[in-house]
Amino acid sequence: MKQTILYSVAAALLALMCCCSPAGRNRDFIRVEGTGLVDGEGNRFEIRGTNLGHWLNPEGYIFKFGNRANSAHFIDEALCQAVGEEFTDSFWRRFVENYITEEDIRYIASTGATTVRLPFHYKLLTDEPYLGMTSAEEGFRIIDRVVGWCRKAGLRIILDMHDCPDGQTGDNIDDSYGYPWLFESEEAQVKYMDIWCRIARRYADEPAILGYDLMNEPIAHYFENRDSLNRCLEPLLKRTTEAIRRYDRNHIVIYAGAQWNTRFEGVYTDFDADSNLIYSCHIYKCPPTAGSLAGFVRFRDISKRPMYMGETGENTDEWVADFRKALDDAGIGWTFWTYKRLDTTRSFVSVPLPAEWQTLVDFTGADRTTYAAIRENRPDMAVARQAMEEYLENCRFENCTKNAGYISALGLNP
Image (cartoon, rainbow, N blue to C red; front, side, top):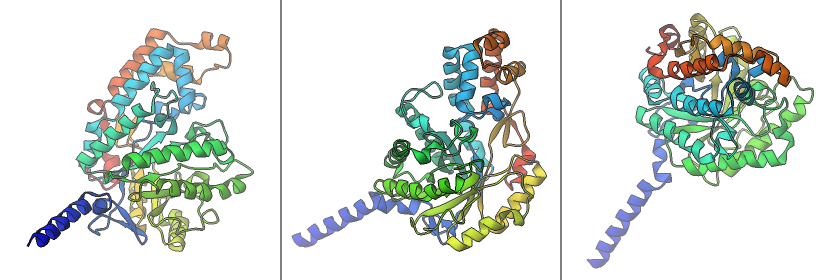
């Protein structure tokens, strides 16, 4: 009798351990099955949603700035020249607090979206100064918070390293110095993999996270040596995946196509590099038809892996509706770019334009190549600061305008 009781207790403890262990919680994670995704119950999961672009990787055009302030460090430099470093750091800290809040996440979920993609700069998770912050823990707390909001709202979230150490694209998209130095620097690659390992350790047991988009839009098409750079892409992503799997075997890993997420054939050959692997394509300014997806569909059929449209859009409601339907018909999940923008109808919600915003637009586009030019072109500081203060209020969800036509074009409910 005593032995029977002991066996019963041991069995109960084992069952409890299985339920509480990471492996026992696998039913909560989205996973790859064939060329699709399923949830823990084996039901098909459709990626349908948007990007939280600009929030943790500011882009100049979303501020309506020109090419002289088109990436995070160029924007920061221009704002420091206009209003001073202390005010600019304060602006960034409040921008992070205001631009995306739990209200935004609840609203996205209310439309029927299933997924958000979170682009972030690698500096957010280091001790390098970024967005007015100076520690990795501050950055992780921000991600903790938005992951928690998504969990409560029933959304899945994709973590997207949009800007990698030393740059993976070689343009403003990755806030780099004009070349994808990542592929030529072992030191930068070690830093890159270390950040992903820290992410994996922290979030290994978090089912609200759908997966890790390891690298956004690698290797722009401009470079004559792009073919040799392309040959570095798969080996680096495989090394990174192997490092991640030491800590996290639950989450999907996402590999991007070369040349702005468009080129896969000849770049990727090991389709079994990981059992939970999908590929991500991006495309803009194309006919909104099945023909524009033919190459991606072909690669999906060759690789027998899911294909996911991480970014597209930036177009009329009619175009968005047609292309969304083409994606749905092709069985390709999507997160359109992007959720929130300044003074536009081409996003879920629009930020009202501050009254004196043109003052900052003009200055960021002016000649600032010498100190004399900065002094000559600097706007009235009080006017510039007021425009920035107004932006911080306008970008809050309750002050934004919902673009019902755009949301409806996505087949969602505004």
